[in-house]
Amino acid sequence: MRWNVMILASCLVTTGCVGNSASERQDANVESSLQYDSVPCDQLLSRRNGLAQQYSLPTTAKPTFSNPAMGFGPFTPDMRSKAQRDSDKASGEIDAMNRSIDRRDCGKPDKQKKFALPG
Image (cartoon, rainbow, N blue to C red; front, side, top):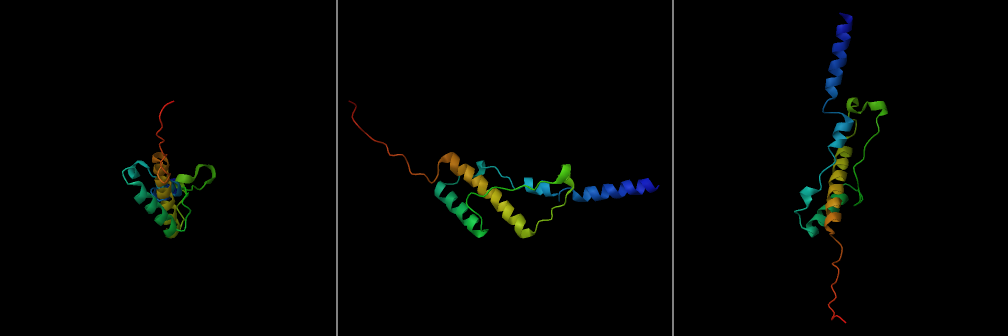
């Protein structure tokens, strides 16, 4: 009976961490850049710069990940403050925007085409 109570208690503790683990929430900060491909370049650059300024992040921000010890990531509760979680989410958005910007060559001057007669 004593073992049953200990196993039940450990199961309850483990299930309490599901959906609230640090690794799970950090993975959610990574976004697809494809959603920004339909946004015009000037608007996308403006959105990225505004988001970076709002959270005091560089325009080259990337999502960060903690390194939990020995595979306990799914069981380690997310202890970050709300401000830190919001900043990490903004880093993920900025990174996704940057990937779309780089892929589409936004913000770079158009190559001037030279017209010349052959010969």
